Length: 204
Image (cartoon, rainbow, N blue to C red; front, side, top):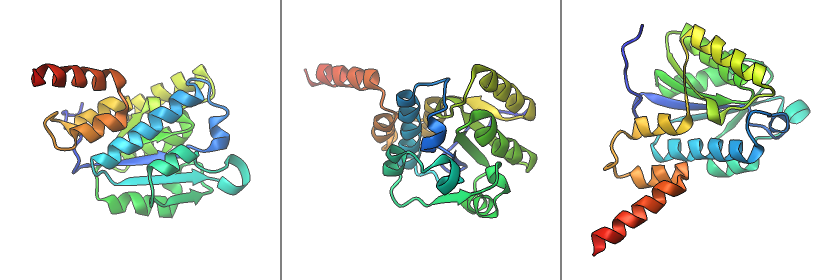
């Protein structure tokens, strides 16, 4: 049993695996719109928090197509590493990019959950790193795959969570200068509304 050690902006990195147009079409546990929203929100929040971000695709030009455009737009200037290996960590360039972050806590999201997110996350654990998977920024093709993937990751020591919780854990303090940018990235309209109401009352 591991002692809880919080994610911080200094110890965490984000790894986005295979959020590709072709794979998106097969996702059945989330609607395309919801999954896109969640992945883009995760990417924008991580960027606002200053996390290193590694993005990869597999068989981009032959099988699964490019990264979906909204995610590309959210991460201008971030190189997307295309590979052929099923496990992203088996690609030397991806492994080197992860190592270059210098971070020991890796947050993964990918399509599909039980392969593209799970395999590199379990590999990270095997290499002595801490791995987290944002399950709602990952999608898969059936409920069976989702449940089996979650179970296998937990058995391997991967921490499963949702993207918003991971990002606010890193934010840590709502008085942080970047808190507004983080919540805006997370796109929580009810939180924005509450903030507006609070500001209106404070102005009276």
